Image (cartoon, rainbow, N blue to C red; front, side, top):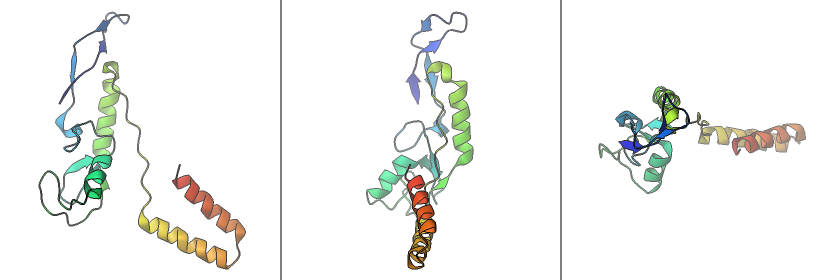
Amino acid sequence: MVFSWMRKKAADQEKLKKGEELVIPNQFVCPISLDLMKDPVSLSSGITYDRESIESWLDGGNFTCPVTNQVLRSFDQIPNHSLRKMIQDWGVANRSYGVERIPTPRVPVSGIQVSELLFILEDSVRSLNGRRCLELVQKVKKWGQ
């Protein structure tokens, strides 16, 4: 995929060179959105997508891999840390083209973590442990930030 960004000339930092194209490596592009991935995740099919795009696909009621069209055995999204790091390094190396380094995404809270916290909170309420309840509520608040 090719994007046109302006790049500063090495010899003359005051002037901008127009029309120079930056080619994004294909493996950095989400097969759904065709944009640079910010939070790459892999599915059980082995294909990697940007988290936001694949979540929209799955939330739309789709049960197949968009690329292979095979039925997904699992809807788990495994963060592809190696690919994200390569994309971040590529962004830093190409910042003169206007590419911004993508931030490291926060790991989403799992349903199991929420269930465990609610179980502990329920137990703390029953035992009238206000201090522990406050700690747990603060943890939930931190998850939402």
